[in-house]
Amino acid sequence: MPVDWKQFVVSDPEILRGKPRLKGTRIPVSLVLGYLAAGRTFEEITAEFPDLTREQIAACLDYARELAEFEAVV
Image (cartoon, rainbow, N blue to C red; front, side, top):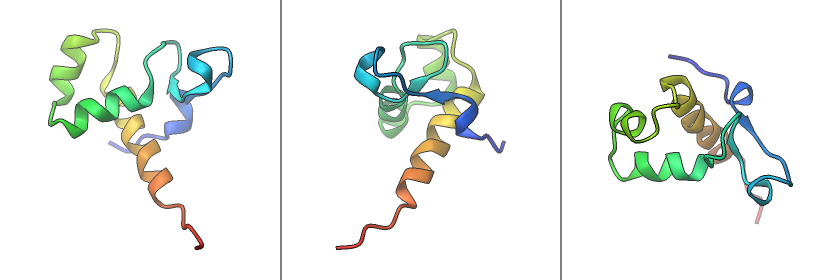
């Protein structure tokens, strides 16, 4: 399911000190990515956070993918 993270991930310096979060929530992207890294499934995450959708979780992955594509020049 292709998802454009820009529709779901926002950052506001007044909320969570500007950490990227899911739009309309105070759930940081890093929290969702941590759950996924720990092996949690979409179903387990939505059971813990019933307001989240599969699209929002997929958007967190797409956000991380785009960040990982940045090339660092050393």
